[in-house]
Length: 588
Image 1: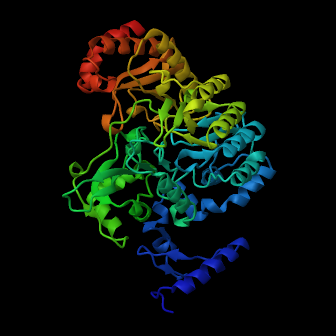
Image 2: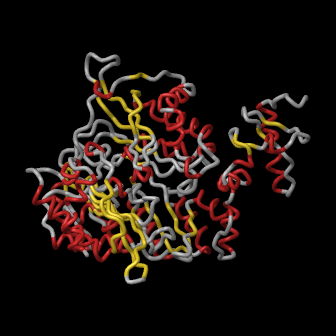
Image 3: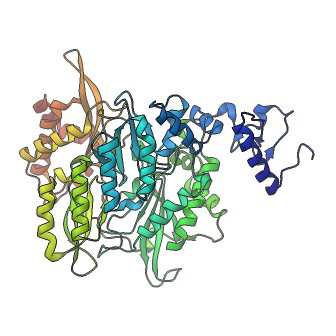
């Protein structure tokens, strides 16, 4: 074989097995990959010329990419077991690799691990919720958090319990594989999929199929950066699909168009609201059965072409900024065995407007005589006894199914109309409400400084305190969403809240205290808007009266029936600063 000859598929498979075995014996001869994807075994070559990841030379890779190059995060299970045996938190490169199994070293905020699960479309069964409750009780901190990706997190896990947690997850029919690091995160879908009277398409089978495709496709791990996918079936509850890297959303096409009448999907690309950008429609129309092949092709284009040198520029947004969305679509199409249909969005029938706070309260299902009940879980926190009790209610009065939402709450579906009052009473006894309170019903908060080293404030406790204060001070008659996030990472998506608070440290009397930058006027879906920054570095003690004044001004100055997002949307940021200036004096 000459130096320029490529290996056959059979030879590549042999070499992969050979080097895997050699690596276990501590012998790791050089095997490189050329920029065009060909393997090379030329030991005489300059290693820097051939040692690369999708054409990026090794020396140009960022730290995390070098860690992945040296050892795939999926291959660290034995390291997790060893750390558990030694009761030792991961250090160095292991801190990154353990995230491939959903395990995060969150010290110094908590000298322990956090576990993030995967729950496809947010749909789970009673026995799974009970199992998570037992894990929280026996091996974690005695509580759990529902996340903004319709998922669960457990915290305060000692390293010795990490393997117990991972094995119990599998026993429950759950997993945490790929829920952290540079991987495809939990797949979200419309929480009322299959039961919503107004939905266009039941997307839960798509979310579940995407979940399993990811779990069983090794190349979908170790992306240039994390990646979010959502399926929106056009139901009454928002899944915030337009905040994702890829959003598939159902539409109808009527008579007289270039395709047969029926249900199709549009595709939105590159949502990343922490960078003030929603996903944008890319102009294509696909059939429901084409969603997964398109998703897989788009992921592969990102894997092969995303920036692996600069973590700040490695999300899908930046590849599309560089290429334009049409080149990205063209590169995707090259990987498929069908061509895209190009159609203007105006030629499609889109969803009805979302129902604000429709994730709370009692709602009739498409199935006659059945209802889903939205349960308000303050900032997503549940205790083990509450988790077990909710599971019991779902089993006795429904089918045992529980659905999580991106609003950090849950639904109990399939409740007979004659049982609704009893269910609401039992939920109240558990410690939760079902009412769509206009303020408390829209509170969203990240973990905050309680459990995250990046956060500058205890966002969850601040959110609860703020909600109670505003509910007492202001009589809102329309639903409001208030998002509190602890740092610029914007895990709570503060830019899409009616009111968004990003935690910062503020100097008061020479001391550093928790405070917030305040953005106003955000929304998603049919109310899509990026909130405008109006106030900076406000101590939390002043945030409460400040926002009370802001809401009071809105109520006094709005047009009849005008929503908060619409009211603020017709004013510039400078005009809002002037409008709300008096409230700053009140807060101070």
